[in-house]
Image 1: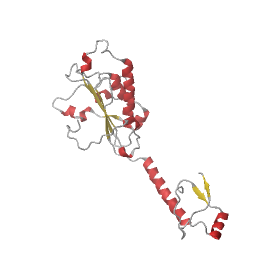
Image 2: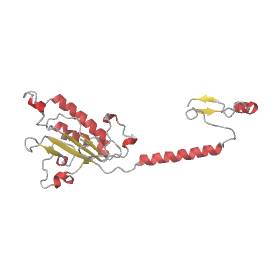
Image 3: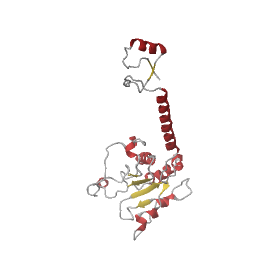
Image 4: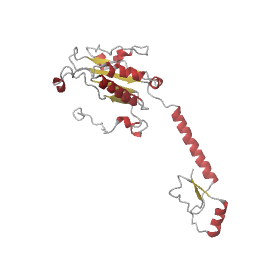
Length: 249
C-alpha cells in the first residue's frame, strides 16, 4: 500500500505502540499522529463474513463494544501525551457511538487533557467542507460536560444513506507546545553541574603522575585517608593508582 501510494519517506516499526515511551528520542519531534485502532467493523457493510452470519449473530455484542471502547480510549490518550504532538486524527469504521463520540468526549473530559489545551479541530478547516458538495453529516450529540457542541467537529458516514461504508473521524488539536519551565530547569541543572565540575577541578589540580580513571571510578567515590597518603609517599608502590577505601553512596 505504501508503494502504491508513492510514499518514499515512510519508516515502518513493528512494535507495541502502547509500550513506546513518550520521552523516546526517536519521537521527540513528532507533531502529528493518525490513530486507526481496532474496532467492531460494524460500518463495513460489504464484508464477506457478514454474509454467513445469522440475524442473531449480527446483533450488538455489548461486552466486545465496551472492551473496544476502553482500548480505543487508552491508545488515543497515549498518542496525546507525546510532548511535541499538537494534532491527532482518530478514525474507526464503526457505527456505534460507544466507539466514536463517547471515546472522544471521554478523552476530552480528562483533567490532564483539559490542562494541555486539547480540543477538536473545526470541520470547516478540512477538505470535506471546502469541496463542491460540503459534507454535512457530523457526530451524534451526546451528553457532555463541555459547553461547546463539539459533535459538530466530528464527521460521520452512514452506510444506509451515504452509499459508503460506515466511518467516523475526529481530529484532536491543541496549540503548538512551547518550551516550558521543565526545559529551563534542565538547562539550569546542566549549568550548575558544569560550574561545580569546574570548581572541583580548580581545587584539585592534576599531578604529574598518571591518574587514568579506574573502570569503577564514575560510580562510587574513592576516599583517601591521611595515613594512606603518607604511606604512598614513603613507598611509592602504587604507581598512580589512587589508594583508598571504596565507599558505597
